[in-house]
Length: 146
Image (cartoon, rainbow, N blue to C red; front, side, top):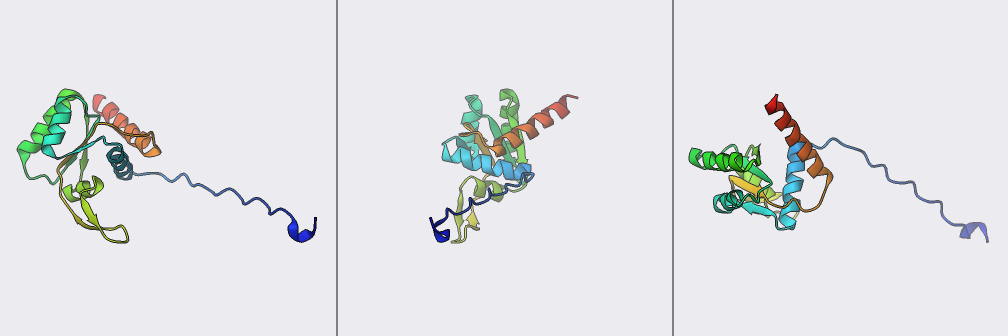
């Protein structure tokens, strides 16, 4: 074997940084995984049905929802079914995460439809984002009990 035909040295393994994931980033990823697996319900009608059937695992509610009765109904159903509620700043942001948006060619949101509520009935696959979100919810529940 000549020097030119020697086997190339194995490439070093890529360094994976364990970056701290924020709760909102984790929520966004969990919502997208749930949407892929068919476990995402959007809007008052679908969310109320899922909460009433006790099939909901997590509820996202927009803080900028104008209708107080709407928020009261969703919170009441969540309390009755012992479902965690995560408050999101904007309904447009929640709508974009749920796939209710038109995207530019580069992937940025061009136009998003506002949704005030989204419910996850099936998380889909186990991901790091799901574990981060569930840890956060568990810490919130522990803090409320103390």
